[in-house]
Amino acid sequence: MATKRKKVPAEIQRHRVIKCKYGLTLTEYIEKLADQNFECAICGTLLATEGINTHLDHCHETGKIREFLCGYCNRALGHFKDDIKRVESAVLYLERHQCTPS
Image 1 (cartoon, rainbow, N blue to C red):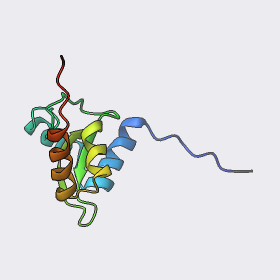
Image 2 (cartoon, helix red, strand yellow; image 1 turned 30 degrees about the vertical axis):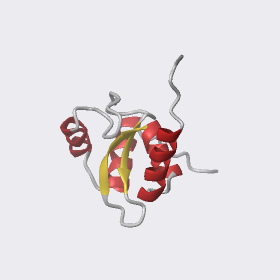
Image 3 (cartoon, helix red, strand yellow; image 1 turned 45 degrees about the vertical axis):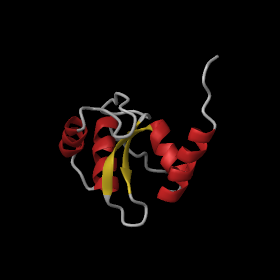
Image 4 (tube, one colour; image 1 turned 180 degrees about the vertical axis):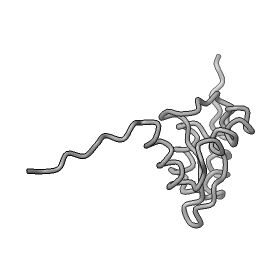
């Protein structure tokens, strides 16, 4: 007979994930977000203390924590592979092809 595992409450699981992934306590995580005024560091979108739209960005090479981003900005950096030259090229591209309403 298999042993049934107890389900870990969501809040405790969240504490564990934040501690394991970022090395922060939940309190430190929320304080860091509050220091950013609960806003995305790139676009200023309002962020919740939890949820799929709030991402604590980090360097994938060193693991160093950067700042909180919204889902769109976090994915954009990922698609640009954190490459500043790619981001700069994208800005130049958008400037060359600005869409202005008629």
